[in-house]
Image 1 (cartoon, one colour):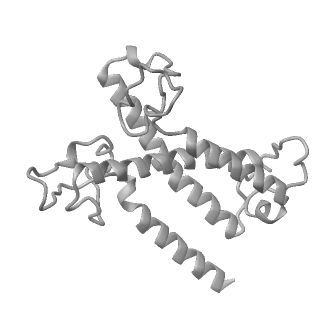
Image 2 (image 1 turned 180 degrees about the horizontal axis):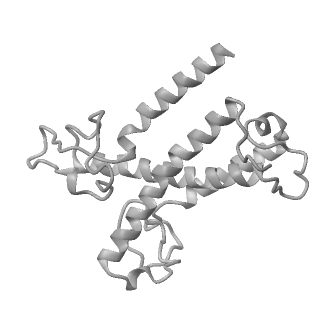
Length: 206
């Protein structure tokens, strides 16, 4: 039991270190090959309560392209984590697809899921990975689509929900909400997994 607890503490510590820079960007930095210093302290995500936060210095000495890549990594991890939290809690609450009633929740589902289901999930993930990107150079996509407004904008001239009619201030606010929710979800799914491994009940009322 003690060894298991120590292992989980090490995993938590390593995960926190790995996500420190993603939890809020940035630090002023520049590359020797870059004529202008890139100031990331004004970028989306440098907001309350942490403000400008990059304790590991991951944004030091990088250019705008590398910052944009790191921002996309953070945004993507946040989106996946939000889905993960919802799925984790939903299955713990007893919700199942028809035919999967006997599959347990949490880590126990990994070994209990049939191989054919794994194959279907991997195929679905591959399809989503291929589809969820800027398709401006893909044949058959709306010819009027010239690319997303920002990293992670995958509307591809197909779905809008009135986004283009909104002000720039409204758009930045919504993007900040998504970024913060993604950060919280990354910490949330980590906490759920750790508590399960420690033997704590995920949903106390169940």
